[in-house]
Amino acid sequence: MAKIQVLSKAVADKIAAGEVAERPSAVVKELVENAMDAGASKIEVEIKQGGISYIRICDNGCGIPKDQVETAFLRHATSKLSEIEDLYRIGTMGFRGEALASICAVSQVELITKTAEGDEGVYLQLLHGEVVEKTPMACADGTTMVVKDLFANVPARMKFLKKDATEAGYVADLVSRIALSRPDIAFSYTCDGKEVFSTSGDGKLKNVILQIYGLDHAKALLPVDYVEDGVHISGVVGKPELARGNRTRQTLFVNGRFVKNHVLSKVAEEAFRNRMMVGKFPFFVISITLPTELVDVNVHPAKTEVKFANEKQIYDVAYHAIRNALFQQEKMETPKVSVPPVSATPASKREYVNPKLVKEYLAYTIPEEKKSVSFVREDVPKAPEVILEELLEEPEQKETHIIIEETPPKQEVMEEIVPVISQKKKPEIVGQVFDTYIICKTEEEMFLIDQHAAHERMRFESLKEEYFNQKKCAQLLLSPLVLNLDFREKQSVMENLTDFVRLGFEIEDFGGNAVIVQGAPIAADEAELRDLILELSDAMQEKRKHPVADFEEKALDMIACKGAIKANKRLSYPEMQDLLEKVLDMEDKGIGSCPHGRPIRIGFTKTEIERLFKRII
Ligand code: ADP
Ligand code: MG
Image 1 (cartoon, rainbow, N blue to C red):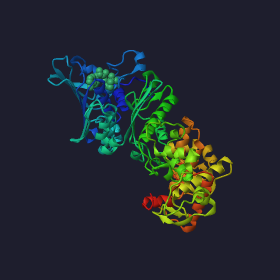
Image 2 (cartoon, protein in one colour; image 1 turned 30 degrees about the horizontal axis):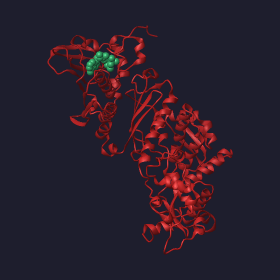
Image 3 (cartoon, helix red, strand yellow; image 1 turned 90 degrees about the vertical axis):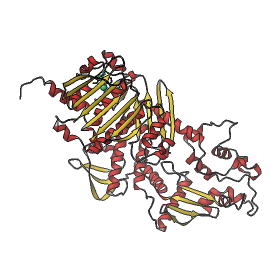
Image 4 (cartoon, protein in one colour; image 1 turned 180 degrees about the vertical axis):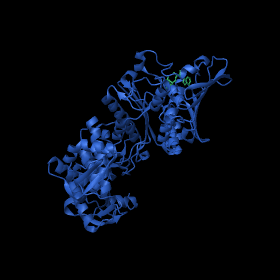
């Protein structure tokens, strides 16, 4: 072995640079954070060729005194931390005092800076860590840093960079998140000579969102503002319609710093449960502010991960903050499903309301909280669903009937609607529309069944029964399936093998990064099975970190969803008939929605249709 020796400064700096200045976006992050720490109210970011050939950050902050400019580039030189105790009370973005040293070790840096007190500014140029030039220069208060030819002296790292456009994408993403974190600072971002976006610095988060995501987003925001036990959650969540198929539009700040926290994303998603389709992720920009001693941001060199002293508490508060925001909005908005205007109708003209339909309607449109908590004051107009709820509770009101001239009231039949559907007169299938909904009719009503929701719920119920009665639910696959995973995926599946077995999978190690699936609780094609196994393994990993009460149900729900008849699939008459019968069976057991809370069927009674056509009033 070679002799042990201390690395030269140049080598040590290059190694350290790899940690801090991993790629252009990391350099931009450090420089923008320095500008923010310097109290700037205006920060310009400009890059060329993905930031590899050119990065310029210009701020109007406090500047660096002329005689300290060289010191700023020394390792562990910082104006923000001097005592070890300070480490636990970090209020500034940077504190390690190594960013400038690292950056200048692997690039050419030019600095122009002036403090308000200084009579003139200074220009400093460094090449690969060595000062090349220092001269006085007349300039405005503040600091401009230019970083050129990043990694020109570290070819190995240069090779790790991606295409210019990809690197530029990372920078754009970063600058936009920082802009979201500080609506009070005017940011501008320019790439290859074109301004991509700029914010006004007027302090309004909504305006930053307008600049970055556009009008659709700015128009569909719900404010979040909630304090509990010293933890303040603020920001906005997007209405469910802004949800997308991935999490790239989720932004989280902890004490002003952009962080990634998978669990908090899940918490937010959990808060949206039943309001959003599975596989969709909500839009949000959320800030968590808490005493600095309760959070450790020093766990990762790039500082995008956080550790909370009391994780569970933070997650709980975040969950309630978001639920609250959603609840407030729903309280204000009239439900989208149109309901008969019962309250406006004199009692004598009130119509009998089919309790079953009402229950379904309530289950679909009313958030959990409303079902138990009565928030309606007597002096405010009642929401239609509250009126409907009262109708259900007060028997004497249920018996009031509308007088219909053309069709005399058939009280006995109407009151029997529920049994009629399921026992006396079986609904008939009229057909299928949009390859997704089955149209059915009885003498008294017509309704549509959502084939996917219905089948999913049916599968969910039978999987649940098999699972909880410990019946074996694995079906052997006709031909075993080899899944090639990446190393993390493989590791995660293998770690959770017992859970997979319990859910009805037969999975074995197949060497390398592959597993072989011999049996599964559902028949599904390769792509679906792969997705399902990965989704489940994600959920199981999550569960290990944060136990979930009804994990089994969620897992079964995932399986049910994957194996269910899809929308946009033409069904044969027997298939429809089969599904209809299952739906009726489930309704007899009181099950009226898919596991995600979407209704299985919606319908109109004959009278409702007549009213819509204005045959009756
Ligand atoms: P840190 O930010 O961790 O202190 P850096 O290496 O990023 O370490 O910066 C070193 C020092 O240089 C900072 O502590 C600060 O005093 C000074 N500095 C860097 N950038 C700026 C800026 N844009 N405006 C004013 N001072 C700055
Ligand atoms: Mg810094």
